[in-house]
Length: 89
Length: 359
Image (tube, rainbow over all chains, first blue to last red; front, side, top):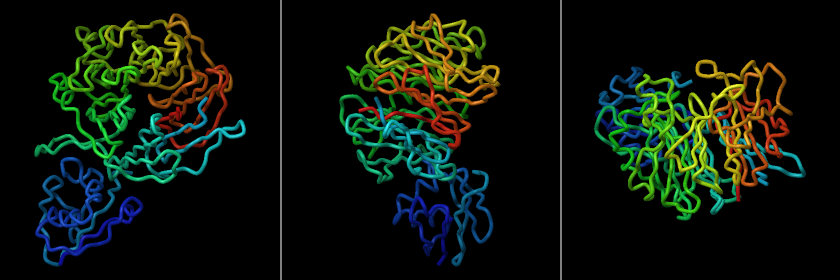
């Protein structure tokens, strides 16, 4: 199972514990998380479901490339980290 | 007279209350979060605070009348288009009650969407009637990358009649509760446009538009390059020139019952925007702009470099109490229409919006 975790900086806004997912892409992983936690979705994605400009997602330590489709692939045991980008201050 | 003043800053919401003759601030709410807009609904006391979280987007919170318990409610959201460059909410830039229809709210936003709620903000609908206007292709950002609706004036005697101002997209009016819109604003002048487009209504940059509650067809605009007033609901505007120390600024407030009385906070135009000669003044006219009186009692001696944003000046329903705050975190209040100012704080975070609670 891949594991997706969220920056501590989100916790004051919304509960977002790490979650184990079976997902082939970053989009799949997020979809599963948001199905159980819909409020979290608007914190990570914008109105067009694009990754918010100052949110960064790492898959196994590598920054995701596709910030629109979120099509970066996951391995069965991947670690996905959703972080607050420093570009946002 | 109002006894509650909300100050929305870059680092939270600060609520000042008058008690025992003194204005005092309690502990901040939403500490650390940028507050872009605040509103207390005079119809039922509902409190609203709009946040613009730099990383996680726009959020909207509501508390019941008199409560200090806030709940996140749905923020206005653009529908999904499937296009890579589809719109997304950047900021709530105006929030007003929708007149006599209980639960109705209007929200103005960057990138220029107008939203309406009929259920106290539980859900929002984009006004497609305005969003789909072909003229919107001519809108552009004024100080921001995208255009924004910053002023919404709902006629107090006719909730169907709504006027709004856009930076940069000019002034618009609906007389059917938003079902249709027409561009108004003849006479507004855009010095920043090519000469042949200077009077093009859609290209105007009104920084802030306010209407006199007792005489709603009387409106004032602090524009990017001047001061304008209208007495016919915003259809025709006349320019007020020769204003000392400057016609430039962002904010304007109008007396609730005297349409010819208004306040401005002048700055050196355009690229500077700081007070002229480093001298912070509030300009007041009591004769429709024929003459202005610079008000300085209680304001700092030079040099003072305070800049006041378009929503950071407000007047209460009595017409006697005004407040304004600057991006350097200074906050002033007057209880005599600006004759005397008291400084409530020199140490707030940068101030985006100040609003009185009016019953």
